[in-house]
Image (tube, rainbow, N blue to C red; front, side):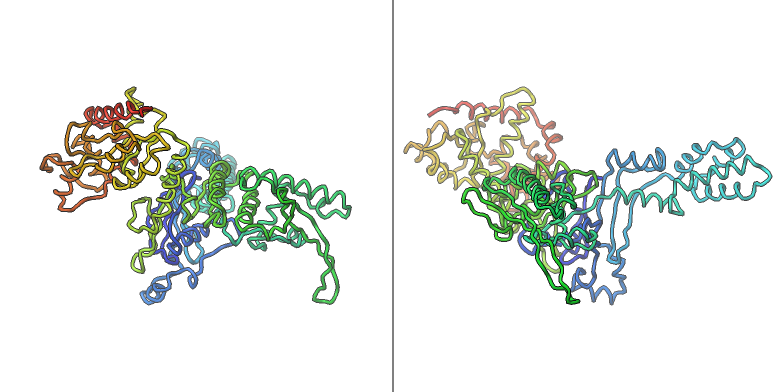
Length: 640
């Protein structure tokens, strides 16, 4: 199953998250501390936990300021469902269901699963009961007389009753008795241990629902483990760090009889094999220090029991040898970031080589990791985790956000007691603290590109970036002029920042600057051109392209085309005839709306969200304007 969306209600500070869309590969929940990110994951993991029997607890999880009020209102809190998820069946899931009940019984690919505070799970699904009856009848091979009677039945309970009647009340008719027994046999196979079709269907669906594997900083591998206790405990008896330790041994296919073998050479060889396998795996993604080597050993210690007797305890020790400094340290004395990464790799390994359905939930992964190591972990998520299953993680670090995949980001904000925590895919949040990781990710990528890209088109903001790149790609699909592949488009965050940007980097990189045309002009850019920071021919204004004194990049669209973007972004119905004046279109719209200005980024965001439909509807005038701009930009490539 693929998780499509999640809704969390009345859990900690989440009153109603609304329906949160989940990406098919990786979803990133971004928000500041105490915003509700962990609450969202904690509720989701309890839908079908992979570790132990994590349940809901009203006293710990129900919003404290509402619990008393809701009880006084007579609400049954045990029946409140704090988590609801919508899944889409994959082909293999549908094949499994059809193998049990026959073709055509399941009539929808969408399944919903909810869990109440009292622990009851609720399943939403659609089945064709009449088709299930037909499938049983066709498989039974009934004689014609019984078949006519059976074919009039459309309810499963009625078919069960017919089978019982035939087998019990047809003693003088052997053929009917055999038909009844055949029906009973097939019905029993259909229902299994259940007494109804719905019960059997839910049982089959529940076997397809993925487990939620939750990992946080509390799941870190202990440096010393009592190995016999670890190997002898059942899974449900293990705490989180013990599960990680057991997964560590499973990662390298360690075998108990070798680990605990009294012969030193046998035991030592097995431990070295385990250490080598783990070292190779870790160093694929731990580029911060490639000179590390895992060392694992087992020592014996004598302990006194409560009954006064003594026992020998086998302890597994994990150490890290640093070949760079010729020094080994206990695992617990390595950096917290390395401990976390190593522990997660061991814990995840239990799922990597089987096909059991699982979804990974990571709570603030890699907080102790350096920025470079966080990027390594993002690569690990894409190359290893997302290839196996869906991943949902929380973060407030800009280095754990991929600016090239902002469709993965979901913003989490705490809106106070009245509204609680809100989760949204609209990244245009009003809270600057919440937005900071996204801004930081974009800024980091811009800086990285500047260090490796020689030819740069500097634009004012992200909307310019979106329009220029998106229209260039579309023109390429149409076989028309596109931005030269040598260009890298760099939004700097506003017209006022462009001169500073050029002054700092213009002497080192080739730059062409694209700016809007305004009354106040661009005296500072002109002065920089006179000082040799860039050629005056590399300062391009939108007005130059359109032959107008006043023009913004939005004016490259025809009024009708831009209003389509504006209306989609703001759910409006403005018409071209509504706009008056000869100034720029954004000012005409603001004047009509009775405001000073509106967020110019939202129409650009609307274009990204529905590119196919919007691009196909653009007029040739709009396309020609952007093509003319791109030709002008390309003409400056390599000019001094």
